[in-house]
Image (cartoon, rainbow, N blue to C red):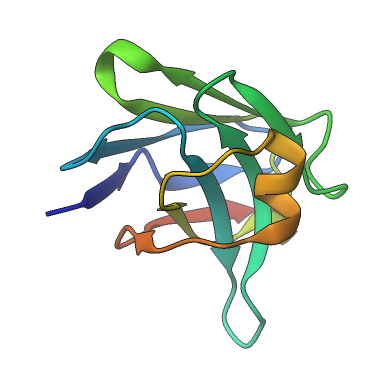
Length: 128
């Protein structure tokens, strides 16, 4: 059974940093898209970043580019989202998601958003 488990959320002040983790299990990790998404109360879910696990290529939303970095540890089947320079508008529930096996790239993973498996989410709250 496919499982994604996020961790690392919390409350920080503006300008602070957090690192989110997403452990994926239950299937072959390689040749998948893994994406980070976030949803704030009353807002639609938005894509934050994505990685293609085969080559580690990534892509980011304009709103987080230069502040967030997504990377992976293949040995641990884990993807990370390092967030620096956090802003109050980054406050949201952050979730990771994984696709079925595919041939892709970080950019395509981000733009196509074709994900089949989702984690339960981890809350990030940034105060001003």
